[in-house]
Amino acid sequence: MTLQEGIPGREYVVESMELPIETERRLEALGLIEGGSVFVLRKKRRGAMIVKIQGARFALGLGITKKILLQA
Image (cartoon, rainbow, N blue to C red; front, side, top):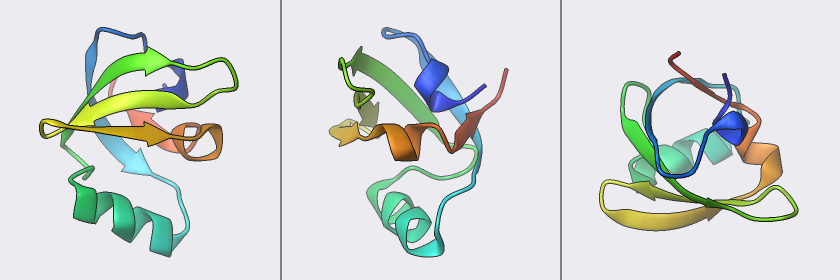
């Protein structure tokens, strides 16, 4: 499943990311790594999501969340 399909209020483990290398490196610098956890806080109307990664909140757009795969 992708991060976009995640349900608010649940925590998931990142399996892989299929993003451009620059975007992937930036997310890794923020703490979103393969094998790491991500907590879905909210989903916005146009596909954006508010997530918590290592205690920090981030907003991720639809184009990014559709390319982050989670463990089932």
